[in-house]
Length: 190
Image (cartoon, rainbow, N blue to C red; front, side, top):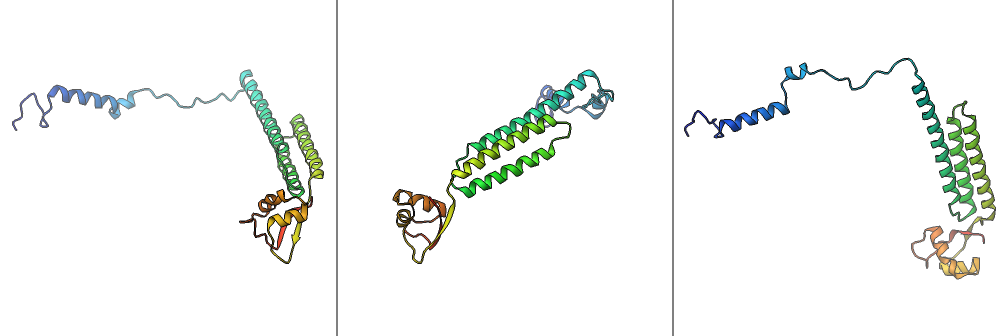
């Protein structure tokens, strides 16, 4: 194929090849061109001197963090209060977990935040008191032992005099089939 003066070896017109070269040069500038551009610092160094606006921003930041902590603990305590407890043992376990969790939060509060400390401690005390009262109304769990494997319907009638509670026995003991209760299982006392 003969090459004309207006065409490149690949067969494109010279005008098109020049346009593509200019586009490529715009997208990928030469190194010397990049070095000539003034560089803008990505991080502006802060002044070592606190200004009134910086002090106000720091105070606002600290107040927002206090408010967020108090809101989070309040939401946690509300969620704990909405839990439906099925037996006494789960209530006692939940009460212990709440006490440990909020105690760990109280240890993280700085000494200067007395009001926040008292607010979180009051939430902890109210939640633990509520759980303590709720635990009193719950039935304890007893272990039932038998010599013979019987269906859950039999045990519901024998323990509670209510055959409708057989599903509760199956769910509590995670039995695959209600007709085959083990010889030892857990049940609520009432």
